[in-house]
Image (cartoon, rainbow over all chains, first blue to last red; front, side, top):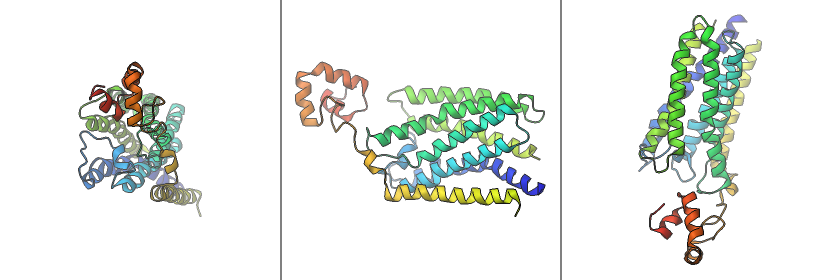
Length: 206
Length: 85
């Protein structure tokens, strides 16, 4: 029974690595290549999933929503982990919310510039940045006293700050050149942090 | 069946159902009615179409200008104000 529990916990923790890998491969590269005329340097990843995209369903189902499910599974794995304290459990709630938002990106896609669906899309897409960052910061503080995980703290905190700066620059700069690259960087870094957390937690998980 | 195996199976089933739901939402688009433009094809609540906006802005340039400064992504602003945002 103990072996089964450990196996499930490890699978849940590994979701934090598997999810971003699939997301990067599909949304950053594969689906962008399948979209004729799509310019990844100047177009956002949301445009891969909007109503007029030829790869809409692929992107929304196997890009955004599948990734959201992996984030939710990772959050559950962090919550169950014996290596994590109270702050880490709270962090897992923020990871969970991030996963829900990412999942909803696959449902709230739109074609109009001004519609209820567009507003919903903006909310679920953009609110991931602050929510995930709070979760990562809480996690960083939680593991600062952990013998085998405290090395994560000085990695997570500066990368988290870089993420917020990039997100701010992307979200609040009009006519930003190469906005596709800025967005990919702002989204990519926190999920790379998640991958690092996943790998390290996987290794120490009993 | 062990408890965690059961949890694993439940998680797998829920994940498949959740993905199936997204597939349904993308194929049948039941939320399409929420994608109708909120304010027509014009400038917010000022005017509803290009033709009407040209007339309206001819006599209300200040209001249209203010709207376009606040909503620079509205394509009609480019048409009305020659690319100035």
